[in-house]
Image (cartoon, rainbow, N blue to C red; front, side, top):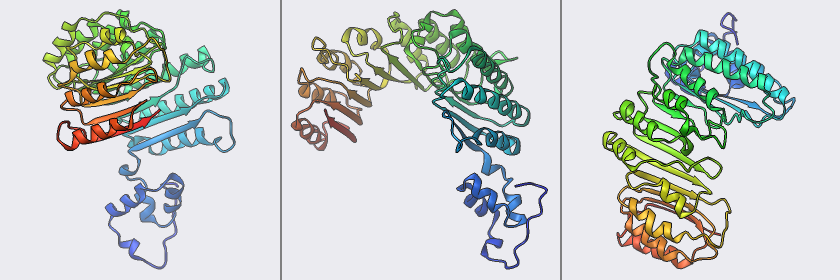
Length: 405
């Protein structure tokens, strides 16, 4: 497809020839690149229509991490697209699926350097950028390749940071220094970042106690417009909560916090820090996602009563310990949040204890609970009791998902 080409005009006019531009654009919006290229050869009008900004605002570019002839052209076609239509992009998602070796990571790094450089020169409307699950701490990323990619990404964010609203770097797995360098690029030559939605879940490598880093605290202080923040619990500190209270209280609506067994999560957070944030950010709702952090003592240290928890997910990932009991969590800890909890997800192995009664009482006590998903050892009568309570108006459940182990 080329702007300067001279497509052949069809001799026989059809109803398509008189179709309004807005209708044509809607039809072409559903087509893939190959079909769009073919449609552009039909006539001059269709060729011109292919350069409508509406058709190229959203883009997902996927690179395969496995050597294959089928995927050999992915890198070249990505560059071609950005050079041709990159100036129209508003929402860009980039995927690099499970890189197999250093040769492919090098090829990805070189392609991304060209892609981001071209975008940085031609695009001034990008609002959303997502580059997920790169896992840059894996051995297939040699130090030189990793450093070059981070440098290219940081340079690009310096250029687009002034109008970028959404940034998702989930699963990057960087060091604290590398991660802060990338995030600081968003506020380059400015005192603050305008990003309103930030996802840095698994952004730092496992086992890092990010909460103790003064550098990370200073970096997060540059964000002044956050409405949604997704991160790991090993990033949470009193200083971070204080920064959010001072700089984002008027905008912050959602915090999604993941706590994994391999992430440091023994830090002490004062309840007054959460209380101050909740008092100033009046619309704040916090969602917790626990993976293999199941013991009552650990959960009680994290789930402080001052936190406005909306959603809670507890997944044991087949963890089984005959000395462990879920009962104290269900009867003593979670009812603390009965006035705010709206969603509950449980996946645990309770083959050594029956919890039907405790679960039923928890559902009844949480008056705002509308979603309940559980994967555990249950009696069939448990589901009957829940449905009867819902029918009698004793609970607000609208969605119930049950899977018996």
